Image (cartoon, rainbow, N blue to C red):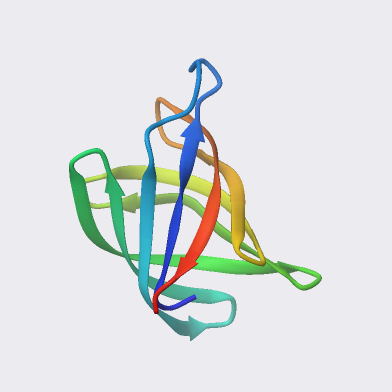
Length: 112
């Protein structure tokens, strides 16, 4: 997962249509302990490009990783819960924060 960009969209339960393109750049992944990993990421949406270290738990459903975070505070961004399933070169999942949330999906683009 190092050197990949998740490129996709999200949709909220009360939102018509999809968001503009969102990008989550995963620059580096490091194993911390057990099922805990640290994603050195950049969140890109609208005019924002925010570098953040994100500690996540990775659970496995057979051969499919599921990134999980629960009530994780990202300084300057907010507190989030998410479940994101990764399979081949696609991702899909759900996310929520204090006052909004929704579904997200897209493709995984590998750096060349």
